[in-house]
Length: 257
Ligand code: GLP
Image 1 (cartoon, rainbow, N blue to C red):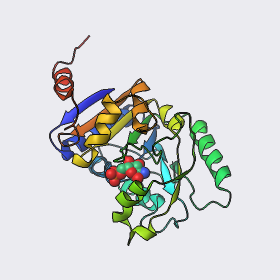
Image 2: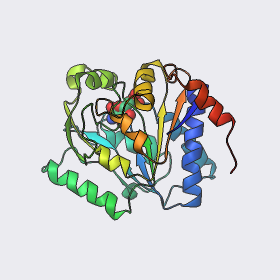
Image 3: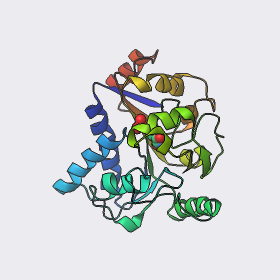
Image 4: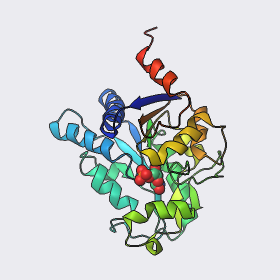
C-alpha cells in the first residue's frame, strides 16, 4: 500500500483528483468506480472544476457506484443514485447512460446483483476505484466480517454505520437497515484503488487497515493485498499510524528508477 499523508482535506482532494485526471486524460474511455459518503466529495468538486474549465473531459468515461440503500426511491436525496447524479454525473458532465448504480428498488434484488456484476465485467472491469472508509473499516458497505471473496450482494448495515449515516436522514429511524454493495472480491478486481480519508474519526480505521492484520473484522485491511492501492489521508486521519514518519520519508525520497 502507498500511504500519502497530506496537511489538509483539500490537499487530499487535490491529490486524489490528480490521480483520476491522469488516468482519464490518457484513457478517456476509462471505467471509474465511484464511492459515495462525504469523504470523496472534495475529490468530485476538484474534478468538476477541471471539467468546467475544459481541461478534463469525462463525456466518454464510464462508471459504477459501489453501493445503494435498499428501498429508497432514486429521486430521494439520500439515495446513492441521487447523490451520484448530483455530485458526480452532472458536475463532471458525464453521460448519464454510462454510469450505473446498484438498483436498491429492484423487484428481484438477487438478479439485480448478478446483473450489476455482469455489467462491470462487460465494461472490461474497473480501471480506478475511488473509496472512502467507514469508522468501522468498511469499504462500500462491506461491514466487518464480510467475506474477502464476496461479490455484489445484499448486506445488513451495522448499528454504527446507520448511526454514522443518520446525519443524511431526517432521523435514525429513516436510515435503511439494508443495502446492496459491491463485494470485497469485486472491489479487489479494480486495477487501481484510491482511498481517501479525512478527520480524526477515521484514524482508528486507517491504522487498522494499514498496520493491522489482514482480517475481515476490518474489511479495508484486504487492500494490503492489492497491488496498486494508494491511501490519501490528512494529518488527523493519519494520527494513529505508528509508521507515519516512514510513510512521509518514502514520499519525500521517491526513487526515479
Ligand atoms: C458510507 C459508504 C461508504 C463510505 C463510508 C464513509 O456508508 N457506503 O462508501 O466510504 O460510509 O462515509 P463518509 O465518507 O461519509 O465518512
